[in-house]
Image (cartoon, rainbow, N blue to C red; front, side, top):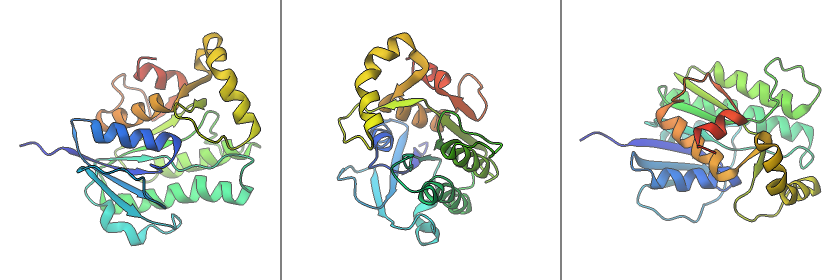
Length: 225
């Protein structure tokens, strides 16, 4: 009997990672889902294994939990303006690079799906911290040695589950998005559609043969939006 695929998700208590967890657990090709996070998701499922880990700057203690995976979905992030510049860089760059290093040691053939962002600058010279740090993280992942790295660059991510918005600008845009998207469809994507694209691309690759970078339009196309 063919072995089902194993997924590891980082950030499963967040907006996109939570949907990725639901989609992974429901997918018929997936036999196991491991969640690495600071707190429990509260989800109970026979396929699910949860590993509580507090310091993503050091993933050596969770090496055993990173073994034998086919797909990684990395959704940890921080909002510009909600944390200091130092914290934004740490979460965006250092956490991603350290997790990739530790995962590659244990699951070198895994596909790595990374939640980046529109405008990510791989030249690492942008004056915009978010763009510069996302570009730095992308470069680190492309150097990590995985056979497939998929860098998802969504525009605005529309929360399909009600949540407390991190800043007033996010509150405003959430209110406006349902109208704005009819005029500018590529301005964003729903959190659920983004998560679905990340899981499906991790499992099957990009059927259209796209390169490692998936901009908002390509992500929407993958889920038929």
